[in-house]
Length: 284
Image (cartoon, rainbow, N blue to C red; front, top):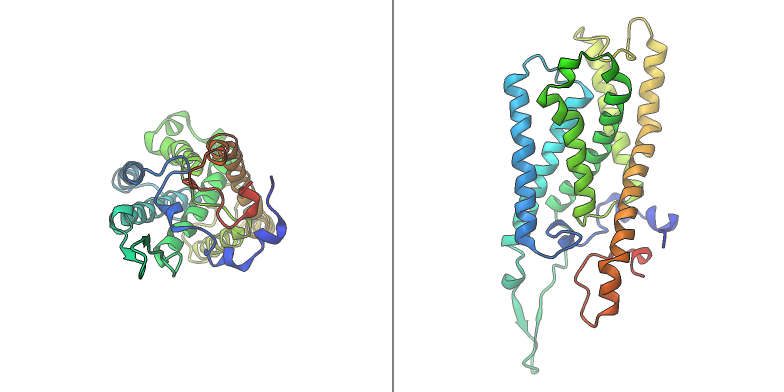
């Protein structure tokens, strides 16, 4: 069952308020918070190990390229995601949620967080959007336009392989294993990020640092082409990239509804997995 435009264009999605906090503590496929923290720890340490290595050993690497921006902000996402998951394990552990005794009944119930998502949940969600959309852009850009002109020995460099291949695989896996939802309207944040990067390239040019970051971005000889490419990257490409991410999220939810979601609906037990929460498109 597909979602609707009316749902996807609600303002709460822009405010990152349309998810449950457990989306940030658990897998899509399991409620084991400890395993989820271990997964987050692995992705954090592995990615940051390569990130630090690129700073130490690849001194010729240029900080203002899209690849390095993607590399760094993916690291920020993994860092925020680990801290948030650790909070879910320690502070929001099911065994540590305070039980309040209902008056005159002797029954108890778990307290809920009336404030919804906290600041660090929203930061994690924001950087997830940026990391996934940006890494799709970088991976396609690199292998389709840049790799054919790159020397073979450079292509085989481990840091380059991680930056342009492994990083994308890690985020692709992340889409399918975590339960953080994807809202289509959030492409506007990817567009703002693209605008920020476009301004960065203009500054790099006028500061005399580099007027040709990539072969097709030549401010001196082809300023018109550069302007067209930058405008397209701000107003068109983010929509395409985030639509791909949104489609992958729908694919995950389809697989879920056909497997665990189906078993869940057939059981008499309360819901234990993410089914889309407030989105009726994912509740049946």
